[in-house]
Amino acid sequence: DAGVTQSPTHLIKTRGQQVTLRCSPKSGHDTVSWYQQALGQGPQFIFQYYEEEERQRGNFPDRFSGHQFPNYSSELNVNALLLGDSALYLCASSRRRAEYSYEQYFGPGTRLTVT
Amino acid sequence: AQSVTQLGSHVSVSEGALVLLRCNYSSSVPPYLFWYVQYPNQGLQLLLKYTSAATLVKGINGFEAEFKKSETSFHLTKPSAHMSDAAEYFCAVSVFMNSGNTPLVFGKGTRLSVIA
Image (tube, rainbow over the protein chains, first blue to last red):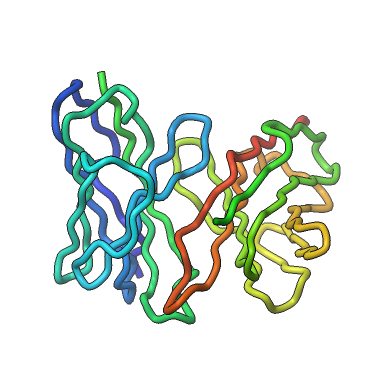
């Protein structure tokens, strides 16, 4: 049973460029959440998707957007990259059903470096 | 809103010694509490969770944590540290609202070093 997978593992971009990160949830999970972990910090919630719609959003600018596909996989897009966007981006999956919604499983992350 | 405070950004213990990592939370409703471990260049692995059942929670790799409502604490302990325990540890909180849990709110993390 594959866990949460993310691609790519590492990415280097230049300021002003756009980037797309991808996530496939754990088998049986229908909800995907994205977190940003800056160096030396705890992860911070970006947004959550289920039923192909953004359901909750953290305190991140509109440059951060996402998408969820019918197979529950998800993309995180960041436009107009800033140096401060350099971080580890973590994807977590869970089941929407209420009694299991607290169980989040994390992927290995994508390390984004903006130069 | 919920929040988590982890006391001590870096804790160093000798191999075989007790591990104690501190976590205090703030929540106006009953919380769900979690400890995650992160090894270098890896994602987060769940160590244990408190979901309003038993207050003493046992997790993987010999770790356990005790929920103390009166102290708003959820400290992580392990009786005897092993070299392989060296990692970053994160405490996180979530609450149940409407039809599901809120996103995780993490502390800043505690780096555990184990000295041979």
